[in-house]
Length: 180
Image (tube, rainbow, N blue to C red; front, side):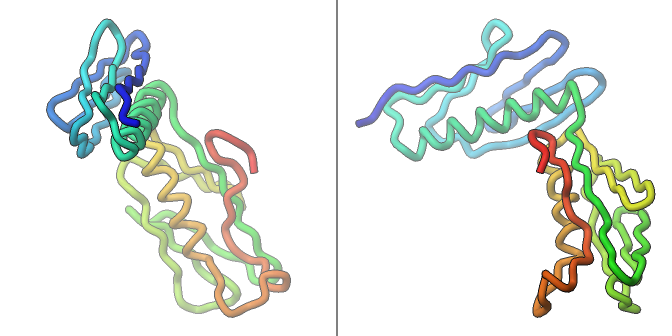
C-alpha cells in the first residue's frame, strides 16, 4: 500500500523560502521564520515559486510527516505576511485581578484574593497588549503566540474547586482561525 506522495505549497510574491538539509527559512517583509524538521525519507525542493514535498513509496509515517511539514510551512508563509492574534479576557467575580507585563513574563496579582503572584512566560518575538480586561497576544510565529496565550490561561487554572462557582481566570475568546 506504499504510494508516491507529493504536496505543493505556493510561495507568494515577496516571500523567499530557503531549504538546507532539514532547515526551512522563510523570509519576507523584514521578517524571518525558521524551523528544522527531521525529514527522514522525505524530499523537499523549491521550484518555480513552489515548495514541493515528495516521498517515494511512502508509508503511513512518511504520509503523516509530509502533512505536518506542509501545514507548518503554510503557517510560516502566512505568518510572514500577517500576524497571528489571540484575544483573551480577564474574568473575575469578586477580587479584581491585576495583570501586567514584566519583561519576558506576565504577572497576575490578586487571583481569587491570593497574596502570591502567578506568573506566565512570554515567548520571544511575541507582543502583548493589555487594555482593561482584554489581552491581545500577537506574533508572526503561530506556535509562539499560541503557547504564550496557553501559558496565560494555564497560570489561572483552578484545581479542586467547582468551576460553576469559581469562574475567575483568563480565558481565550478568539483564536486566529476561528471565534470561540
